Structure formats: structure tokens, C-alpha cells
Image (tube, rainbow over all chains, first blue to last red; front, side, top):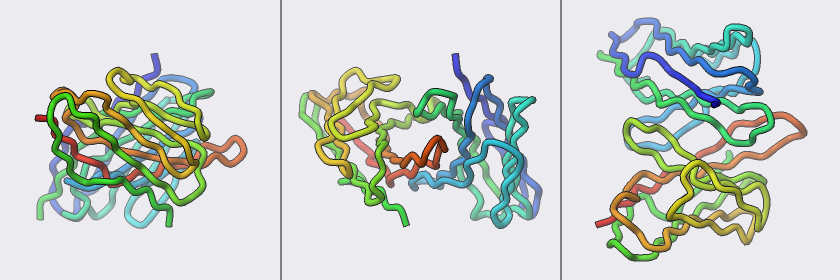
Length: 109
Length: 115
């Protein structure tokens, strides 16, 4: 069964801290998607990656195909980063995303 | 900017009513999806469509149907709403480019309450 697991489920940190959210998945994915959802808000796409690393502002996403693992990092975290972060995988031959259950991040000023 | 819009942000219906949720995207995407999101369960796929008049069941299609008469519009129908269909409903779309998987773009969501 194709699965996507995230950790931690909840994370609280002080403003300025370096944040890491982890995602692991089964074999055979073609791409991994990181998404962000603010409270009461819609879901926005942060990254889509199939290898290596991508960076956008203070956000960095990495993926290790051999380890079947991806991480989302936030540098110099800010209260506005408080949101639920979701990873989702495209498995080969499947147009559907398989979602993790999300990580709720709270950054305290 | 890709825009995915949904017909309502909040909706309250009574048990047994027929409910229509509409989703429109403006980027000529082939693939459109309907999800529901519940606390602790994450996002679950109800139905998806990869072309006009084509539909595929997702993980939890029971109690729902869909319609895709035009490429830009994907409708979710609750034939007879029940209280266990109270949820946040999210529509998404993505366009394929060769064999590359692209990002899904999500609508703002419809929070449906069935009384």
C-alpha cells in the first residue's frame, strides 16, 4: 500500500528557530509535493520535487530518493509561518496524490 | 496566476437535501480533483476527472457523484446529504506537460455543515 508519513504531527518553536519537518514514503514515487495551509485558509503549493533540493526564500525542500525521505526546512522562523504543512506523493503510474496527515507548526513570538 | 474558485466558502444544508458544489479553474487544466478534509484524517480523494465527461472514483466516493461537462468546471454532488458529510471540501486542478507531474492548485475550500 502506498503511504506517506509525516513527523512530527505538532511542532511549537520560538521565533527565529530553524524548523525541520520530515516526510517518508514507500518506493516508486515520481514526485513529492509540499503544501501549506494557514488556519481557515486554502492550500497553497510550496514545492514539487523529484530529486535534490529546492529553495524559495526561507523555505528549503530536500529529497533523498534512496532513503525514501524528504524534509522541509524553514530558516529564521516567523509567526506568520504558523500553518499546517502537508507532504504528498505521486506514485508511478498514478495521477492521484497520496497525502500525509500534516504537521501543525506554531511559531511563538 | 492560476485560479481555482469554488462556488461557496460556507454552506449549511439539511439532511436529505441535494447539494451541489462547483469548482472552476482558469488554466485549461485537464485534471481536476475533489477532496474532503477532516481533522486527524487529512485530505482524502473523493473523485477525480482527467478529461471532459471522464471521471474516476477516489478513495471515498460513496454518497457522492460528479459531473464534468466543460473542461474548466468540475461539480461535486451530494445526492442526499447526511450529517457524516459535514466537512471541508477542496477542489484542485493540475495540467500535465508531457510526462512531468505538476503542482496541484487548490481552491479556497467549502465548509459544508449538514444539520
